[in-house]
Length: 244
Ligand SMILES: Nc1ncnc2c1ncn2[C@@H]1O[C@H](COP(=O)(O)OP(=O)(O)OP(=O)(O)O)[C@@H](O)[C@H]1O
Image (cartoon, rainbow, N blue to C red):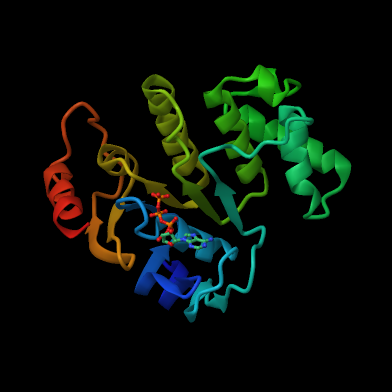
């Protein structure tokens, strides 16, 4: 698999304080990677740097070999707290996000309905966020990100606010969508089991300053047996405990 996103010696400072120490990481096209680590270790900062919301103090982010200079439609983002606009319906939220790409109205509508259908929300397209459950709102946020057909999907603890059953459903949905679309996914989580269940690779980070302390390559496909603890589970928990 060729490299799609490359972090080339990036360092990130916030208010003069080092948030992320020198980091080199490559994300192959079509891969699913989780970033795992304690609070404040720089997971969101790394994600925001790939998204182009944060500019590294040194080093470069490369997308297909070209330097990232700001946000772009090739990188979609899903946040923990949905960030839906309450005055738009589910469909309206997705269509609005597509507006900045200059797509004609009819195509925006078609793409919005298609991506809502892909996340199982075809029947809720005309509902407003307040009429939707937390899981449904997060599906709208996922549909909104996918509708732009990004090459990289950046997910910042997307299921952190959901109850356990909804979370498990969303994990299954994400795995299906990833397998179908082959989008490159970078997924931030605090949850070791979630990272192991979803990913092909788990990058473990520590804080003060934020840095990578382990890079685990798993099997090519996400674990199929979710009932048994993953063999790496205890090792990663130990890494988080001793180095964080
Ligand atoms: N916009 C900002 N301005 C100043 N400092 C920031 C900013 N964003 C993050 N930081 C600091 O940078 C460090 C890394 O924060 P970051 O949010 O990336 O960590 P995280 O691993 O995502 O944490 P969490 O799991 O709690 O979301 C922390 O010390 C944080 O306080």
